[in-house]
Image (tube, rainbow, N blue to C red; front, side, top):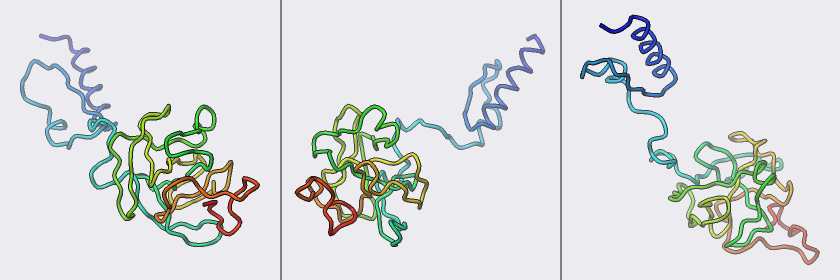
Length: 184
């Protein structure tokens, strides 16, 4: 017979894991799965970091950008996506502390929904970074779904579905193109 404290501890661990959304296997000496494990669908990050099939890496959404409702690109969580003006199609210049504020979108197998542009995964110092029409994509830690707060900050500009290929256009003095608030 097992010690009662061990059995109670094992039950407590299994209950805590089930409540937390983590499935845990507990050796009970029986081959019958626990009711919680048998009836609960599998959850967690067993898909190797990929987004669920229903959520594309890059999607479209409406958001207010500098006082105007715009169709923008968002990530699978609905966070606005940005491009960084100094980047090139092959080099991301967002690293270190800048990357802590502007996390790069990374996945080896990006998907797109609602936009006609091309998404690719490019190996960079940040990992397999997602690019839309040759522009690396980033989120901003101050944003939330539907709230754009980083437009024009530190040379980051909101990404839109009609974002053209190649680097953003710049004025001769190196600033954003004056005719377009997005800087491209």
